[in-house]
Image 1 (tube, one colour):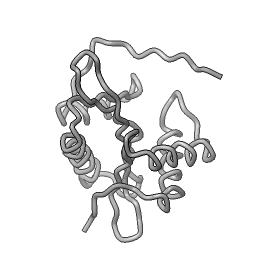
Image 2: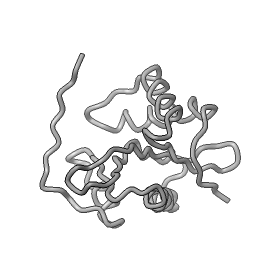
Image 3: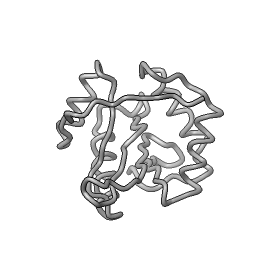
Image 4: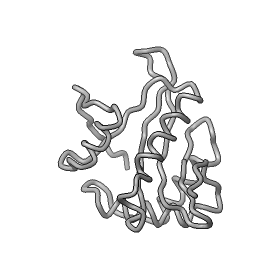
Length: 149
């Protein structure tokens, strides 16, 4: 039976492998194990920054998602950015993604989060349908990025 919980530092190698799968599917990103491990460690070492939630089946991690916390001045409340949602290819199609997303939403509510924002690739219609099915709606806002090197 799958277990839903926060990831630990010992999970970083397995989580980095999942991120590599995700980043090969996304247009904007490329896998980079060093950067992925560094980012995962930064989140895990600072619970005020966010949480990495996982689905385990025994020793295996089947899926993961990040919730990164910030404050919205528009609503005067704590909000979250949902990132890096990925289900292992061998675990897809049986509801693990939906169960993890519902767990993440409950986790966010229990931690005082009043809004969750996420991004998907513009052409990833299956992800957009998935999130829409779970109550997410397209925003009128347009994301823009400025890489700082």
